[in-house]
Length: 251
Ligand code: GLN
Image 1 (spheres, rainbow, N blue to C red):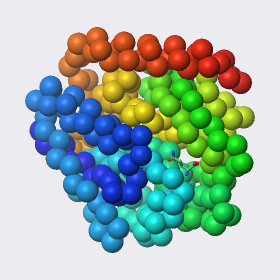
Image 2 (cartoon, rainbow, N blue to C red):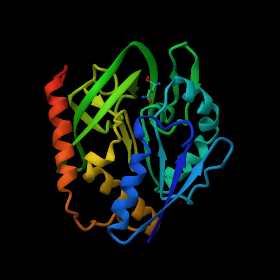
Image 3 (tube, protein in one colour):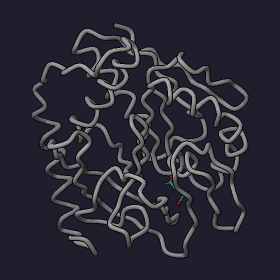
């Protein structure tokens, strides 16, 4: 099957090799006999709801965020419709902040967001940097750990009752206080975890692929055939150990 991916602002939101997440999705799809077709969706280019099974937004600093904020806000309605129609969406760090209502940056400028996730972000004076470990339960009864790296000054506050992506075991997470990291609404996930995220968290890459396939077929997310994942498991354990060694408020 052909899985259609829309990569938003690859020329602006692309720090920490966030692009590597797409490479992982492409490989893991190919190993199951699927092909990933990746379109870039830049400033002024429309998001057409239904056209993409998965939309991806990487991270960027305040400067790059300021360059795309007005445009992502203008794409908000189409992004919300795409999500309503069951597209999977992954947004990382700067991209995550811009899926919320707004991001008040270091200079106090209020950058508009896509209003897709129930949250707002305000830049603080202290940067939250280092390896992070989370526990996530995206499907009831199926708990997994997610390991990554964070580097942000923005503090993200979820609306009351909003679902985080996970709970922080080690690291800062959304704001260094709540013990929450990321946000999830159905198939839409935002997170501060860079690194890139998917090479060391194959279960999460497969969760995204299964959601994208469900959008493609109009059915339920399929159970994907397991892969070897020896190297991936090693990368996960190195990364988790680094996060645990760092400790932090929630360890
Ligand atoms: N500029 C944002 C912050 O520091 C996002 C940074 C990033 O994407 N790494 O909060």
